[in-house]
Image 1 (cartoon, one colour):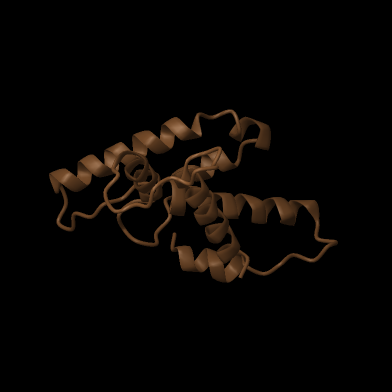
Image 2 (image 1 turned 90 degrees about the vertical axis):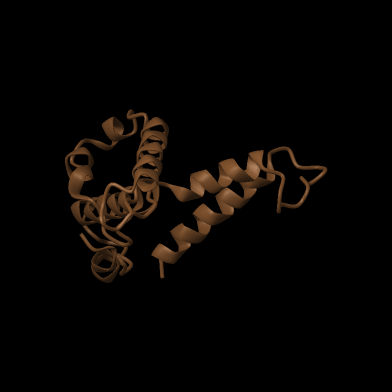
Length: 141
């Protein structure tokens, strides 16, 4: 599924009196977009896999019980391996590269500013949260 199609068909703000089923459908579509386009992207660019549809049909409470962090990490490792081995005609890097950037930011001191002296948490966490809020705000446009 093309990411642009989701943006075109589900970016309108729902009316306040929208039926619960419509609100839930939009929420599940945007969760699908977030999972397939941000946490589990492949190297195709803007295509979103259909693999999450069976999971998104589950009740909300059950979706929250999955180990999403482990799954994102495993997917990123697999995509890094596929990109390094060049197993396809068009080898590209996939996976949650923002996670990889945060990891590099925390461990490689080259090319980054020093930590803020009064910060209670690492600067990379602040940048990651800013990035997440930027991505989420772009969905609302």
